Amino acid sequence: MSTKTRLLLVEGDDDKRVIPELIEKNGVIWTLDDPLIPHIHPCGGYAKLLNQLKTRLKESSLSQLGVIFTLGSLGKIPQDDNYIKRLKKQCLIPNIPMLRNL
Image (cartoon, rainbow, N blue to C red):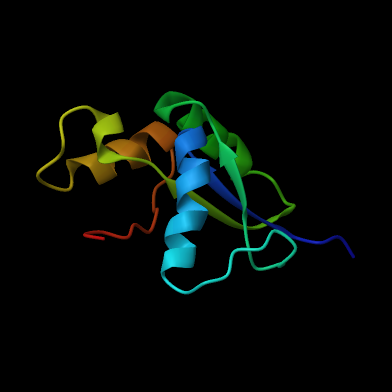
């Protein structure tokens, strides 16, 4: 049986560095040998992150896929739900659950 992987796509190297620090500041020990900890993959920008997302969603080896990007990547900071619609359209995915107001 193959091991399913957890993957977190982020925009860049700064995100890859900061996310574990933020999680540890909130009491979660971030160790790479823990099977519950995802691999963080910096994509090199928002456009490349979208391309990676389209590809990674088709991978059968993934058990979980997460995505973190800044709203500033979408241009003007959105004041409504248009950014969710835009992301869904760009990824060609009808239903992406989104966390809001974090």
